[in-house]
Amino acid sequence: MNEHDMVVLTRPLTDHGLEAGDVGAIVHVYEGGQAFEVEFVAGGGTPLAVVTLEAKDIRVVDSSEILHVRRVAA
Image 1: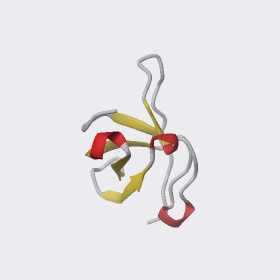
Image 2 (image 1 turned 30 degrees about the vertical axis):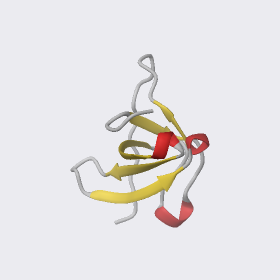
Image 3 (image 1 turned 90 degrees about the vertical axis):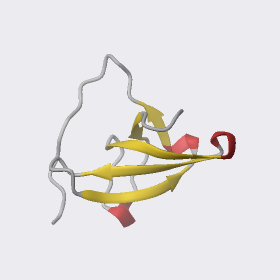
Image 4 (image 1 turned 120 degrees about the horizontal axis):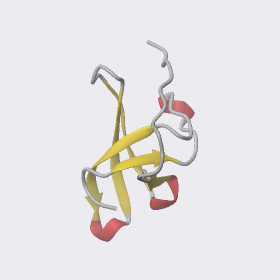
């Protein structure tokens, strides 16, 4: 996985209000892909969370998938 890849969260991150299936973007790759800084934003572009995750916590969005939206707490 590389910087700017769109990724899917594979597990909920309740402390951040994120659910499995939420989509974010990799904004930084740590030493050889050992960890990834991923930003999650609301539809209007407001940042919701920037989280450091391991590869097991995310996967690249597949080109055959469709994105889905949900409301987040304000």
